[in-house]
Length: 117
Length: 110
Image (tube, rainbow over all chains, first blue to last red; front, side, top):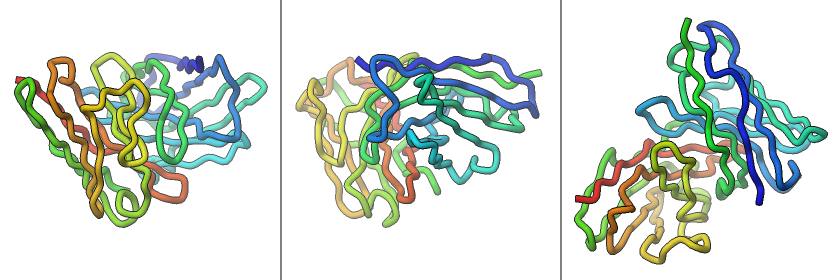
């Protein structure tokens, strides 16, 4: 059974960079899928942030593109997210996920990242 | 890229049927047969209940069904049960390897 687990700081200061990693177990980061990040601010809906292919081709939500970078490390079976210049509006539960064009089929449990001084 | 439009809330009594709409554009919902629906209970990751507009993953009850007409996809839940109370999100491929969620709909079972 594929499992995804988010890791990273739960608290980030305003204007700094949010960094999260997702470790995949029970399977391998492969070419058949996208590996992505989704967030949910408190009391709000889900938002797709970005996704990456196994070969490192990354795709970003246009509304966040200027601040987001994704990377993948297939040797560690991990992919990562960096979001720069964060504000309180970036406080959210962040999920990592595996998906295709047509469905997200595996999710991590989610990790809350709070932006506060 | 704008969020797909869903009603903020819907409600129904046990045993009734409800429908949640998800309206996009000709660039996303209307262009691809790649709408899926998620059921989200607080504190848990979302659960896939419909994919590719109308298909149901194994294990999802048959009372969940999906449909689409033009730029609007719909999720229908028949025979509402108390455990169906949750938030529901649609998600669509929007081309050029981008994706978009709906704003979410809170379902209340009265």
